[in-house]
Image (cartoon, rainbow, N blue to C red; front, side, top):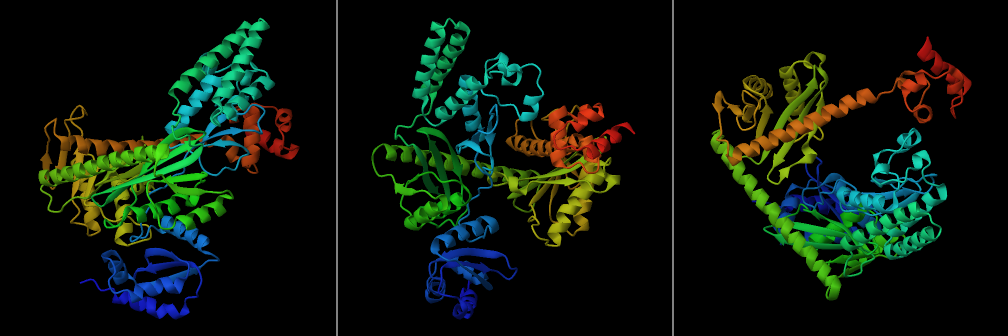
Amino acid sequence: MISSEIGKEVIKKELPLVPKLPGVYRMLNEKNDILYVGKAKNLPNRLKSYVAEKNHIIRTERMLSQTRKLEITTTSNESEALLLEANLIKKFKPKFNILLRDDKSFPFIFIGNKDKWPQIKRHRGKKSKEGFYFGPFASAGSANWTIKMIQKIFHLRVCDDTVFKNRERPCILYQIKRCSGPCVGYVEKNDYQQTVDDAIEFVSGKSRKIQKNLSNQMEKASEELDFEKAVILRDRIKALNIIQSSQRINEANLVEADVIAGYKESGKTCIQVFFYRSKQNWGNQAFFPKHDPDENLSEILNSFISQFYENKSVPSAIILSEEIKEKILIEKTLTEKEGKQISITVAKKGSKLKVVNQAIKNAKDSLNRKLYESQNNKELFDQIAKKFNLETSINLIEVYDNSHIQGTNSVGALIAYGDEGFIKKRYRKFNIKNKENEQDDYGMMREVLSRRFKRAVQEKDNSLSFPDLVMVDGGKGQYSVARESLNELGLHDIPIIAIAKGKFRNSGNETFFHNGKEFKFSKNDPTLFFLQRIRDESHRFAISAHRAKRKKGISKSLLDQIEGIGAIRKRALLNHFGSARSVESASLDEIKSVEGVEEKVAKKIYNFFHE
């Protein structure tokens, strides 16, 4: 029987001390884990509702039954409370809040305006550099597609500054007419700047104006008998026409808007966000917020919007599929945050309703795929349990693999798979600490498993919960080491499976080891394909972690070994000479000529390489 009286008593005790101000409250359990974050215009009035109401929904009853502590943070106004609430929910992920699983920023296209020869590139994160930012794009693919189109029409450079400054002849992009070759002076400064300005207007939605300008320039070049330039301009006009015919111009004529629509079924929800900028659809993204199955779609959308825009730029218009209760508050908060007027509307008729209905259809399709995949995974988990005679049901699998080259840059890797697929936030890599284990695959496996599970047994901060099944890449030996490692920590009840490739390492002939027995699958068994798939993902992750570590070691410059050479001087030297090896062969006078490198430091660099 769930009893909410404990939580109510905690709130009653704190109520006399709570100021009559707007703010945020946090409910904590006996381990000081945050159960729920809420906001209020008047904190005491909101908290009294938990005590006064007798018939709470089951979710609130469960939350109050676990509440042992209440924490309060007051704010100067309700808008500030809304932003703080969204920030805390994303930071602590309380189990009783609606949670947006959004751990990445969206890409933008950036064109710098401080460079002599501006570069176009994809950008994520803070907009710290001065220049022109266009976005957000729903995915890296959408941004890359647009950059590719801009390269086709305007021939802007994409190479970074180090490559640009050290080229003696143009790269292949010049040969295939994707770049005008500014690195080697194949284009005049004014002409290049004109194409940069045209590119900015193009992504700002003024493609018709650009087409007219290019046509005028082509005619002028023809009149002046500059046929080479005319041909280049003709090819650009052709590329622009092709892009315009395929360009995703939206019929609702949305200049700057996000369309947000949700669909809920079987206690789960998908929310689709479509990005419209410069009258173009710049892609869409599906989100699957975590929430109580009984939560209604309006509440989910309301919470989604405040969390989604907590760390993102906001367009002038947000168009929703249905009403939300805090529309006015969120509108006011986002307007103050952005310093421009933000409008939140619900599409009810016309072309905007068509766009919203399309977003709802996308949300429905995405959710159905998610539910199908989830059901499929459950069936596969059941088949694994049946095949290996496991006594427990499976909801979460962890797979372990190691990667090294002759004992160097050794890395252990952990990936996780649950009902809804790969769980990237549970992925971990382990740099092997014990030198004796670096050339010993068994020693590596023992160290990785011991470190991972010892932390969980000791219930240290941020330790992962236990999986229902552990899978290791290897044969009998790896199985024995894994079993011993878990047994030493008292984890006898977590089953382990080892997967070994066949005699000729051919996929489909794997042998599985569990509990002293060998198991095989028929080559067309879906369960075998599934186990291969998660094994291959662990292998991919281990190799990528190993390569990153090896690259980091290789990329350490000889300049890092010279005392007194910081990041700024190192960058100046590399920009001037192109590589550390070139610095090594440089004369003292050449080193002294580098900006920011005074004589004393130049001598130190020269002596380092020549003593």
